[in-house]
Length: 315
Image: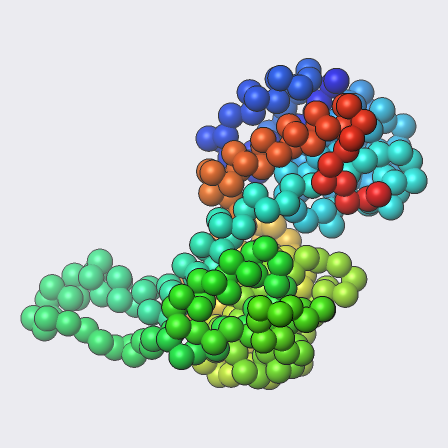
């Protein structure tokens, strides 16, 4: 089996791809530009990608029969076209639950405890020069007793809920179908009631732009909004405006509609704001999570080879 890895750089330089040699003849490209995709997949039986877009324009005429996504989300692949042309698409589920939940909690604690301001006080020497044993401004607050709203109550959402409850929070969730283990509410109620909102939704036609300017306007003026799902489930300009106009308390964002985001992106202007924690789409990528992801991809390839494909998203 000929295997092409198109964007290995997105998997981290510390992750060895040597285990892939056990399942095929592997060619690895660190990055692949859009106009290079068609040529690089033409003779491959299996393509492994993370962020590369695959569709008729670059798959037509190729011998590809399996696409392995090094992720849970697959909105960058035209799955309907692949299905119609006999190409199986397999993703990886559950590998990053702990990693994403950990960063979600870290962002909430970072912003709630006002850590940018407090650590800067020590780094700059202001604390040493003050002659005062402690500094307690700006005010920070306990999470215990606050309401944590979770949009998307899958594996990651449930893990975040467990962390939130451990911190003493009331947990509510926005979910298409009610779940017995959480208080479910509609989206406007989630926005109105939550002190913290964290987003764990897939990107599809129903969720694109879900957190609109209107929904953002319903949020509490001190609410924290955390998105570790997909940038396009939000109105990014409206979120940036809400911070600049002091209509929400802060943002924790790991995902963007354009990655990396350019200088004219709404978040570029607020990237240094103490009320904002922006990270470079790294929530999923703890080393242990990436190692699990690679092993799952290998299992997907082996299962496909013996005619029992697993983790298929387009069948």
